[in-house]
Length: 178
Ligand code: ADP
Image 1 (cartoon, rainbow, N blue to C red):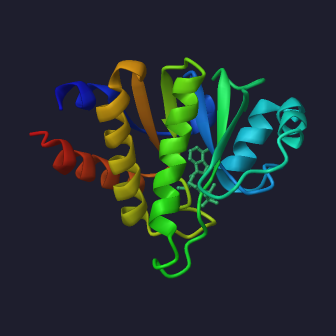
Image 2: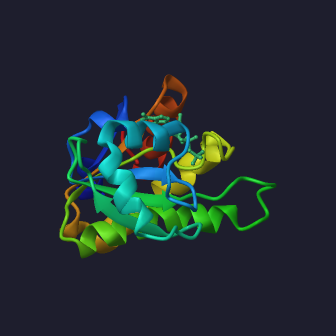
């Protein structure tokens, strides 16, 4: 567990400012830009990002695709499509877990080692924050258990105090930190 604790960082801030190998975008299925974190990433990256996204022909919910980072401080952007929250019984949990898992698989496949995640699906897509953070933590911990030698650092980037407190509390419990 010690290895895993050291590899996870929780911070408050704007994901477009973070200098890691890859940041994750909570995109929509078109991959052609949207509101929230998606809009912020496209604005900061510039038009070239949209041009590359146009060549990808969209992305399924729960899946992920990679592009370069252009004007962003990160090298790459991994675009994943979170589920729209309906009633909690429409496979939302598996799809959200898959977003984190697939993003980390793409990171590894591209020999990249550091990644920053926003709280996928918890904005416009309406996923309850606590439930979403629980799934995000489980997926990242599972991947670090299985592929820890290939991943150096995972950042959870919280856009506000509420998310920050939730992630801190959940990780403390899950990783048994004093
Ligand atoms: P979704 O459509 O997947 O719900 P949103 O972009 O609406 O995506 O929201 C996902 C999360 O990203 C929310 O918690 C929102 O507060 C957060 N967010 C919005 N802008 C940023 C940003 N610049 N950096 C980090 N997180 C952000």
